[in-house]
Amino acid sequence: MKHQNIESRKLVGQTASAGFQIGVRRTFPVSPEQVWSFLTSPEGIKLWIGNVSPLAFNEGEVFTSDEGISGQLRIVKPFKQLRLKWGKKDWEKPSTLQIRLLSNHPDRTTISFHQENLDHPNTREQMKLHWEHVLSATWQKISTLNDEEEMDNYE
Image 1 (cartoon, rainbow, N blue to C red):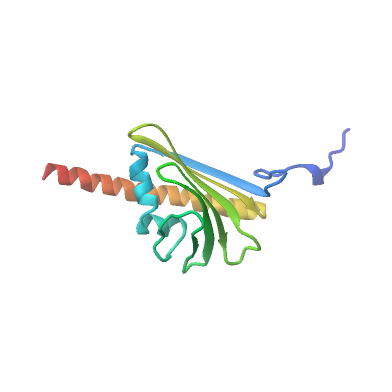
Image 2: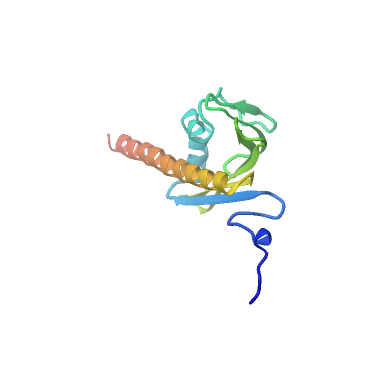
């Protein structure tokens, strides 16, 4: 019988160099421009950062929300990618969050949240649930906006 070294076994989401990571994505029947416009709007920002002073989305810009989420924008590629430091007030160190908008069709966009440098499997699970909630709430908001636009087109 072989004996396994339990300490050397990796846990789900554990990387060799970046702690724990999580990736969550969902595809929506809307353009990357619509998704970007929502995610960078005050209402969209509230979902993934919280209540924060308006952001200009410039590389190097720092933020802290009323809910205790803070960070710094590192890469800003409009309609494609945001990469930032993102952390909660009780975390020892911030994580790296990447939001990508993937699209090869004008009316279809995949929103991908990828977060790494998480400290623990429990933090990974909490963040997985958080980003799944953000994607669901984003879809509710975007689909409501699309419905309102369609209604405006019929009036």
